[in-house]
Image (cartoon, helix red, strand yellow):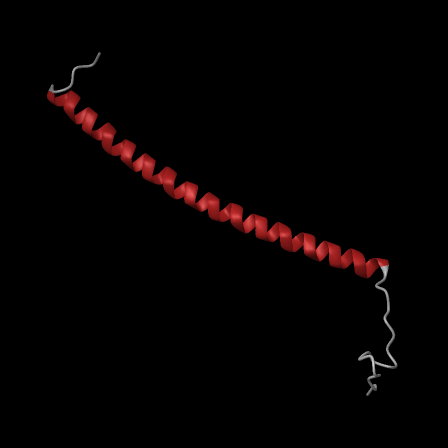
Amino acid sequence: MSTVSASGSAACSPYRRPTVVESAAAGLGSALVRWAERRRVILSDWAQRERAATLRREQLDVLRTDIMGAAHSGLYIWH
């Protein structure tokens, strides 16, 4: 067990600078976290767009059915 000096740092464990490999691993890890967060936002936005597109398709199908029904019954005149 190390003793703590008056300044609050451990007496027998001096600060060690990270190696190039450690620094690269930390940079790569943070880049992967940023990429994953961006991807999650894009997927969330994508899902919302998919729901909106499905709703529009359903509404268009209803309108198309109404128009075709009116045309077959003679209520709609094509121009």
